[in-house]
Image 1 (spheres, each protein chain N blue to C red):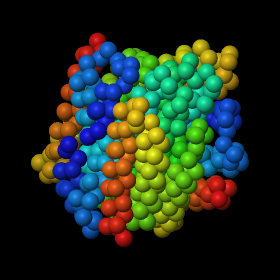
Image 2: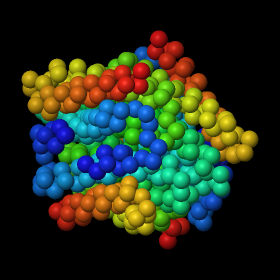
Image 3: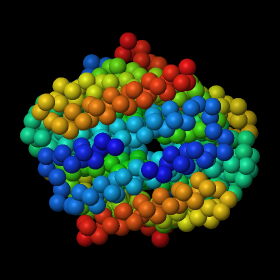
Length: 133
Length: 133
Length: 133
Length: 133
């Protein structure tokens, strides 16, 4: 992907470690797209009635991850309080989504994979929160 | 607007007070649209160099308010932890944006109005957080 | 809502009729929020299996309306080709969503109302397309 | 990224060639993130006054690419008319953004890279439009 290179060319970069920031953005983008795909696949399953909570939480997680990717990408005149609260919301959405998807992992491979990407995104959020301090 | 009526027709509504929830959604929608308009107006001002932090924080606030409006609108299989963390991020984005816009309120009426709507949105978020407990 | 006032304060407004532009933005915002609420209500109905196409098309319509509201709100350095193509996508999403929601209007009041708001949004898009020429 | 695997696990996939669809989604995600990063970098350049049209068109392109990625990802009960109109809007946003970024490519490497990713996204959109017919 090209956005990492563009991110690295910012004329006034933040003091945060760029690898940790980029890792968080990459995971947010993959998590958002994975959640949209898992919500849609769950909707088409024959047992979709049992997957309502998956559809709900993947939809929330996609929305919050998309917003987080944008907020974390921006480096102009950063406000660490806004960035921190946004990443915390993202981590909360990822954990709730992972827990629900894991309940269906044995029957639906897309739920198993979606839980994995949510856990990775949560980890990348935690590492960025740690770097922010 | 029609979405309030549609919201009220949910077959399995949450236990949260619908007026408090709707108030929060309405303010998030107005705040997101106001922030997008203020970012764009600021970009076209002759002193836009002094408004970089306004553009940055209104852009963040628009993204977080849009995600929050969607998460708070959904009533199926709600997870209060996700909703709470998302509203907290929204409140943080609104406060930071209001503070910066207030610095430019004397010179730019769109900043003065944007600060007002951010303060109202923050208040509606706080009231919903209080209702969630 | 405050965003109309902020929109009107742009230092270098476009040549388009502001009432027609604002009407389109307002309808996009209501349509996006209504579609998110209708998708969520449909998911919780006992006959949600019959509403899969409603959930799909309201989700698409919400995403396209949100993007359209943002693109149409911006007045700095406008590109009419981009604005036109975006509004055309919005009109297409609104029509498809209205047609599907109308099929379920007799059984689900939220579908009936959602179809109405989609039709209004389509009309506001058409009027703005006509103004753009 | 994991979303490609999750996409491929949809229980009722569309008849469209999955490689062409996935290519379009991948390019939309990279283009959206690249445009957000380029808008933000442009804002912080010392000659940002000359980059207003870049900031405007990258912001539009990010919003339209994000919506397009979601619409194209969904496979449940697809409406080809909606998908087609959305991809056409995306292609239009990518071309306008690429043309403007190319004007600044000699002075700003992030604009040069952003133009490249917009051109690639436009190509992936055209190939999917051709596959849809």
